[in-house]
Length: 120
Image (tube, rainbow, N blue to C red; front, side, top):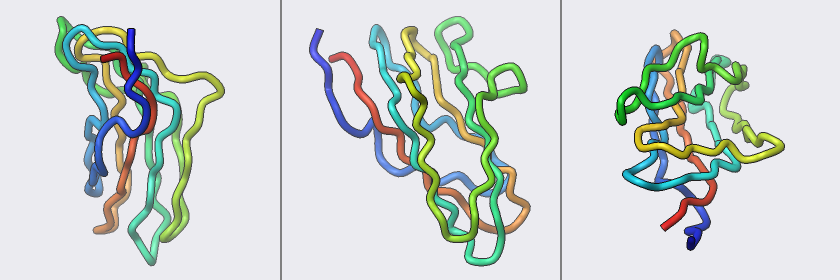
């Protein structure tokens, strides 16, 4: 087992009122999510966001819901929040995912970057 350390992708933009998968485990891989950086692009309003730890459904990405929500965060205007659990979130099956919901009603988006390791 070799670990590829660093970011688990590039910046994901999540528009207001949307839920988006920011990282999904590929075929026969394991990923260890160490932190998620979430930046509020709004200069006028606080954006609320939800973090979901979603198991796969038949090998495909599942759907974010109340049973998969692990955090709800209010991010101040033009601010960045670092979500860093004490232990990495481990995604072990094809289709397991981290999904983010932007609850914002303003026209502002969130920028999200997922950091961690994955087996290669």
